[in-house]
Structure formats: C-alpha cells, structure tokens
Image 1 (cartoon, rainbow, N blue to C red):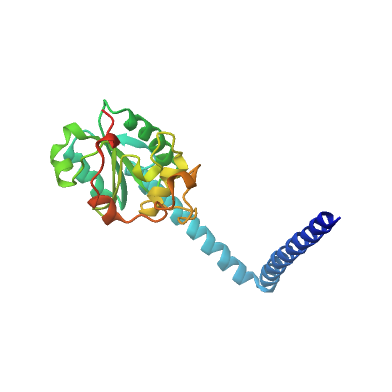
Image 2 (cartoon, helix red, strand yellow; image 1 turned 30 degrees about the vertical axis):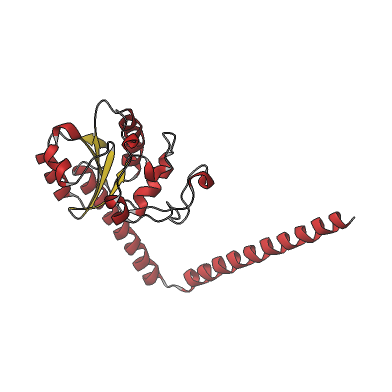
Length: 226
C-alpha cells in the first residue's frame, strides 16, 4: 500500500514538472508570435533580408571550404604539401600513419566519417615514414597520432587511443568529442560528458584534456601497434 502511494506521488510530481515545462515553452512561443504580429511590413522585410544574407554567407563559406579540400579525408604526398595545406585552412586534423599499423586503419574509418560531417575542418593523412622532418619537429613517436592544428600552429595531439577510452572499439562520437575538446571542430555536444560507452571503466580523467599533459607524457610502447 505504501509503495503504491509513493508511486502515485512520484507520478504526480513528474506530471507537474511536465506541465510546468510545457507552460514555459508555450509562453515563449506566444511571445515570439506576438513579436512577429507587432512587426510592420518593413521590419519583416528587413528580417527576411538578414536571414537571406546569413544563408548566402554560410553557403559562400561552405564553397570556400570545399574549394580548399574540406569535406573529404585525403592523403597528402609529402611534407611540403603539409605546410601548404595547413596555411590555407584555420582548422586542420592531420593523421600521421603507417601502413603496417592496424590501428591506423581504425582511425581512417572514423576520420572519413568526420571529414564529411565537419566541413569547417580539413582532414588529412600523412605517411610518417615519408615525413621524418615533421615527425621530429612535432615530436611524434607513437602511431597513430593526430596533430590538431589551428591558425597554422599545432595546438594539441591525439596520441594512440589513450584519450579515446584505451580501446580499439571506440566510437566515432568519442573521437568527435576529443576533437571538440581541442576546438578544431564545431562540436555541438557537452564537452563535460565524454561519450564513452563504459565511462566508469575508464574513469573521469578524460573529461577535459590538457594539451600540455598530452605532449609531455611518456607513452607506453604498447600504444604503438607494430
């Protein structure tokens, strides 16, 4: 009997919260409708023009990105190409890979998806064995490594799968979150909530990553698949 009473009380509380939320949404919509009703024709026309201009600007930006190789995950042939590609774009993710490393193929799969979703960022790959100067300059010692570049400067790194839950089965959403932490993509999720499938297993130390910690850490050799 007591249990039934508790359930009834909980149900009433939930119903009340839903009603309150609905009321707030309705009031907001009513206010917006009233605002539109009070606009004269000139104001409505100006609002329409602003929206059209914003849409036109967005389309122009998209075309500019596409013309610079955004929207696809591409391999670049040499270190010289790297500098030119980075110079052209504000946000760049470059995967330093090796043909014989299986984990690089896993990374390729996720980056292919993200390159199409986040056209605001350029996604590249470069064979580490053919770019010794860059690997030395960027202190890349573990494969795969992602160099995360903003305004021509390397701001952060994703080294191996350490920041992705320490598993080969990490999701594309997890990598997307990690890139969002570095601010190299427009991330719409909550950076304080990593989308690990088993967050308790990996702890909470991944919740907001510090690039100094990433660069300064000595990584175990088993992060590098041979």
